[in-house]
Image 1 (tube, rainbow, N blue to C red):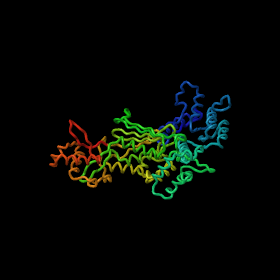
Image 2 (spheres, rainbow, N blue to C red):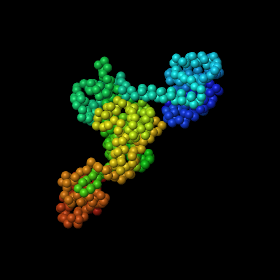
Image 3 (spheres, rainbow, N blue to C red):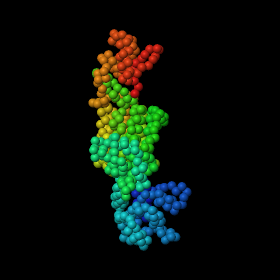
Image 4 (cartoon, helix red, strand yellow):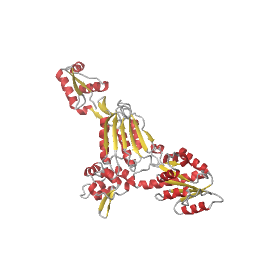
Length: 484
């Protein structure tokens, strides 16, 4: 959120000031990005008016000045409060916008103030409140676009105090292990000097013979990422459906590709998985499709706002859902409807996305949302839910509690005959797995009219393949479905 300071002769522009504040609170664009300070609508906390003005103007990102026909009360220093506030702001910030109300007559102070601000500031004229707010909106849209262009270069910005000595060898090797089939990059891996390959990848530049990482390169390859920029992922498995009882957690601050590996381990140990038997096939099934959740996680890494230094990516697993929350709203002017349709996709971090795209983790740039949706629907689960907070983006994957779902057209199928199982062993596995029951040696002998040595051989094979588990109850061996 950007803080906007409204400055003017309060008496002359009383109605306009209230109108502006109301528009900022009700207009979707304005309230999404800007918070306006208006002295007459703000508590003073016992401070003098002058102290409040100066404190607020120093904390503001944008100054909006209104000039009319009356300069205002002149203070001992020869300036009005409006011009004083402008001078205070302009001393350290160039983002001032002036709106001059058309008037037949202006006093000398106003004329002199207009002459002063003309060279260094953007200004326009208006007649009505509607004209005024349209002019303000137009100025602020350009402000956002200008700021976005500057932010778009964030991941390309060189870290001049970095060198090839800051590159982590494990992260470097992992990138090449995950590389798509591309000889133009693969053949670079074994070069003795890593500077040239990293420059080709887009992770930095060689300047006057010295290699420097850029911000994207630090996230992928730095031995200590947080030496150069703030990066943290918090992963938590909660017991239940609220953030009350954490039963597993991990705080990760390393490189992005290693982070994905750690995510996969955390996901697998904190979500249910298993298998069912259909005919001659064993079908492996999971609580959630890892492809969908991993895509959501990678999107958070690729598109988060890394300039939010005090924020981190959140990956939370509950009994009924998974939430992924990343710092930063969608890149303006994208909306949630745009990304659902894969339309108008723009990247906050083009260099980060480009490096990801070279690996097997990101197959199609701009198709992540539809891939998540397709995978969830294939699993018989609800489509992911997307929402924006004050300055964050959230994806929610809803599950079926701990009920295992059979995906359509599952490719994760094993023919049990290929495992060397006989018909009896397949029938045992079907009964134990699909009916959630246990069997004993006696059950086997009764079911198939066999001897105990035959029953022991059949169960031994299933144990060796980890298809059943064995427990002893009342001195009897019980065979049941394994825990996953």
